[in-house]
Length: 130
Image (cartoon, rainbow, N blue to C red):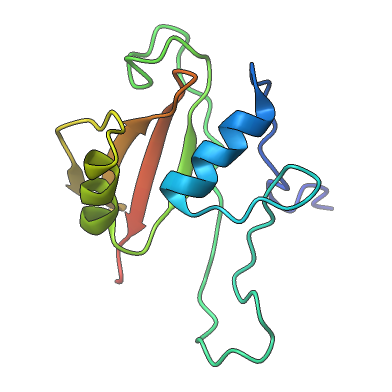
């Protein structure tokens, strides 16, 4: 019998949780709720006519000596699904956010990276339509 159905959340310590939540609200548009977190829903409003799409979350341990999270020294990285990576990266650059100059396309989709004000590397992922 399968016991684990997926990842229910990402939880991490922050030096200033309220300030960090405000940064994510301002720069990435996260709808931070009263409890201090965000609940992602595929169809936030049951009356919306958006098509239902397949959604999944990846759980993937990396080797302890990986440089994939660099320049962050943190032992984790959060990956956010996004709708228009190029537009978001341009917006972040205009807002003064540190954005990695490279972006990568692969069979998994289109990837870009940025840093939050506490030195956490953020992976931004636009899934392939295929």
